[in-house]
Image 1 (cartoon, rainbow, N blue to C red):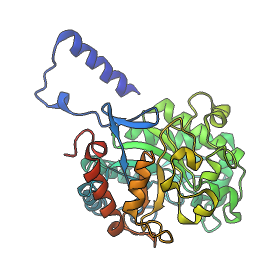
Image 2: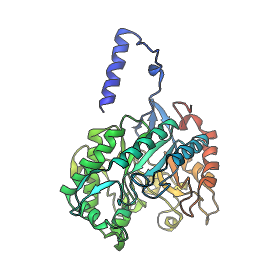
Image 3: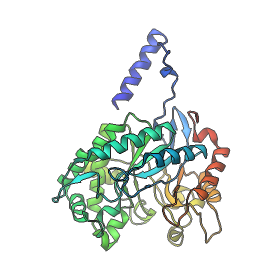
Image 4: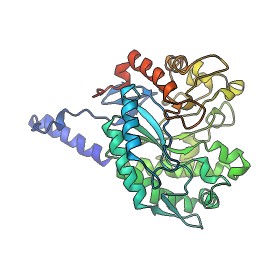
Length: 366
């Protein structure tokens, strides 16, 4: 927020006193910060559509662990070449490295190695013009198989302990990278639905998770220009048409005040969901059950497309675009499982870039 105030003051000075010295070229640099206007995204005042991907990890728990800058350098160059303008990356896969959490569930900070890795990572993202949806945690943090699962469950169930997470991880993260416009968003948790539904994740109540998300969202909005979302595993918990929107403005603001809200929604969609809620690609977000008062993207979907329906990713993505989804982030660009990889993602990305180039790189591809 501070940098926005400075930019506005500079613009006013230029209007009042004439053109500033632009010998450095800075005055000609387009503003790359993603903002929300109504139900769409904007960059430098122009419409933006996310021709996205998921690159969740190269090595599980990359940051603070076995981070390989060469992989990210080469892969982001590939994504940019194919017209992919954003990807979703897990900053912490299961909380076993990087973040310092004590046995009592209090979070005391982030290890230096994690910050060093992230500094490198965000510099690479900016270089290659790849916007990052940074997923700060996952249901995996709470799984029985995770050595620190009880610490994470304890933290989530306490307002006081959750605030240590916000104060010592979330806020330092967004403040550190707020000046890098390519951190466009934080995704507060990957598929929290499973923390509620699955015994192996503790089956914690939505009351605790919604309150936790409210605290996190308020912390982000009070300290940065970074957008906020939650990557729900299914529309079921993101819609008043079904089990109720557990991250609605009403719910979140009820816990943490006016700064507690999501800037956009990012439900996940896979073919197993069709029998319950229909085919998201072939419906508008509203018809699929999503609120229609802000942008909605598909935060995950299979890179292989809908195999039972005989639709490849290119067909699915174009259909989503035509139905008003503001972006598609297929899982994954680097083939971490059997849902597809670069071979499936790149033809779809190239097709969309050829179709709507000015919406994908509205400030110029470079």
